[in-house]
Image 1 (spheres, rainbow, N blue to C red):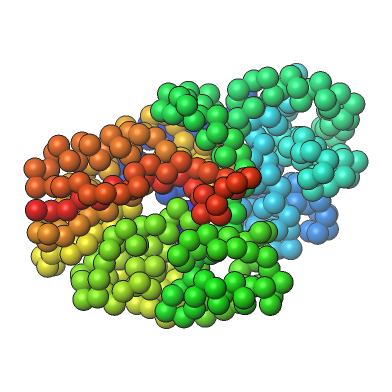
Image 2 (cartoon, rainbow, N blue to C red):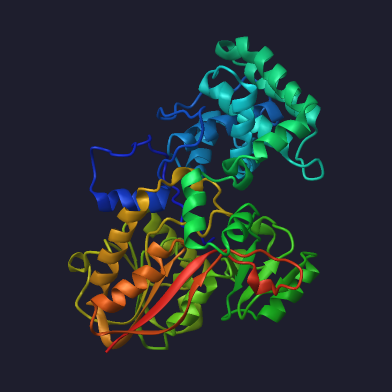
Amino acid sequence: MNSKRPPAPPRPATGPNPSTGSAERLAVRAHKSRSTGSVSALRNDAAPLWLPPLPLPPDSLAFALDGAAQTLSAVRSGVALPQALTAVTAAQGTTLARGATQDIAYRTLRSLGVADALASTLVQKAPPPQVANLLTCALALLADPPETAAYAAFTVVDQAVSAVAARRELNFAKGLVNAVLRNFLRNRDSLLADALAKPVARWNAPQWWIVAVRRAWPDNWQAILEADRVQGPLTLRVNRRMETVTGYLQRLAEAQIPAQAAGPYAIVLEHGVAVDRLPGFADGVVSVQDAGAQLAAPLLGARAGMRVLDACAAPGGKSGHLLELAEIELVALESDGQRAARITENLARLGLSATVQIGDAGDPDAWWDGRPFDRILADVPCSASGIVRRHPDIRWLRRASDIPNLVALQRRIVKALWRTLARGGELLYVTCSIFPEEGEMQAQWFESEQQDAVRLEAPGQLLPSVAGSGKKPDANHDGFFYARFQKR
């Protein structure tokens, strides 16, 4: 997989100004685990406390709704969605409900703005957090258009009531849950219209986020926010050492998996499938990687025999692509030990290897052996504002105050890495952000700051884009920024 999300267990929310850790560590945590951000009047600011397993069949919708509500509570308190799901699954004591719980949690976060707006209208007095979050999950499911709804409306209402009734301490709220959800169904059209008149509900993003996108991209802001509301496609990168795009498309056709080419190494699937259904995935024939992210390795232009650094490398998607393209001496650097282990695991699946080091990219004295690199890929920590269609919790976890901290961290890293680059070598600066403060403004700052830096041609800002009529398949990608510099 190619995700910058950590698999570590969830941590309690730290709040805006934690007493421990430097600003740099906070910025890294914001990138890695998507720090907290306000969500709604029903927000639960306490650290997540996992509830005992629901005394209902684990394959029931009620069981999954209960888990999704706990997951949402954790996200509201500052835990990244994947980590929250892992913790909830462990607390439930079974994996039978993980798929349904995950689906409901993702659906809810993709509709959180409207679901919270509906809850605020329909619930006069805030109930206990678990009840409030369960109502939000149920309203998100009921607000889906009928043609894409995951469950019948009456089933959602019945199972939401069952989920509350099954917990003795929450049994008193079953009448409230039943009344609220049936009220919504009776007045669905008017309630949705009123909710969607509010920008936070219309664009499913916090108000500060909407303002920031509009300020940065006055001519494109609506298209960007609209693209963020659409789930990203499953895009594959073909390992050119093992297969061609044409050859793998044939293998997919034989497996009855519709797909089309989307770049020199990219294939976009018409519908998402489990990776274990992909021919040759376990053997490293393909990897999951967004089309926009697949630009990094070719842009770096590493050639056989070069010494290359992939800074901030976990989970190893770009490292793998670099090694697929050329016989290079690769150092993959990562500050987190658990995430560094994932680099090794992912490269092993591809039949490739690199020198994996644990260290702070902004402090080369702690890990650099003094041998200069010919190429450096600086995929630095960022707001991740370009990948929210795949990670819908990001916009709710992020705070406006994160951006200045991240900008400072990015500058520290790229400036420190520059001295490890050989003369004539090239550094590729990458973020998965759409905010100019982390992109073009950083590139201009670096060019003026480093007198020996020459800016080379690169794509610059890629804004999130979705497939549509008349668009090429490679236009369906996340948001990234690319800038190249040569050391003279």
